[in-house]
Figure 1 (cartoon, one colour):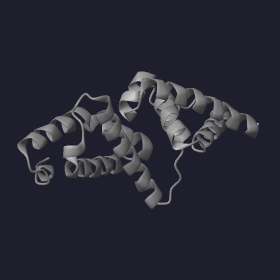
Figure 2 (tube, one colour):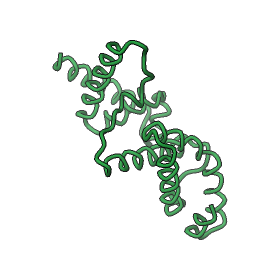
Figure 3 (cartoon, one colour):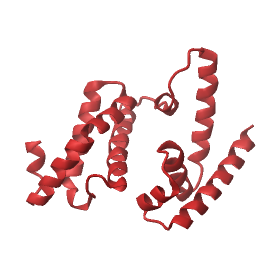
Figure 4 (tube, one colour):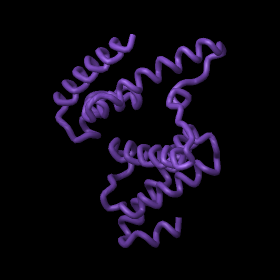
Length: 175
């Protein structure tokens, strides 16, 4: 942690970084490990994430804020995915999101369905995609999503409704 402090000027920011590290390090390691399935790589990604966090500590919120936690988790997730891409490995989102049922045929059907839904989500406009991901993947309420994205609560509800409608239309076109 001392090496991180060398990147931070003010004592308040050093204290904030220490609190962020203590509060989120284990969660970030868990997220990285779920994606990479390798403890050493997960530790490296978390270390790299905290390096980036130390460099931008003044623009990061405080411990306990929903926006801060989501930002840190997104940082570690993106760095883990970048590591996989740099190795030219494929990412299986459905393996990350689902536990494996006992039946192999059932597993394959679920994986295909999840892949189709995720593909459809990523075809949507960014505002709908963000709201849907936060709602379905992170299981946030519309109020929490509004806080995280800095949007009006009614705007988020509208975007969620429209995003669901467009997602439903995209999925129905494929079947």
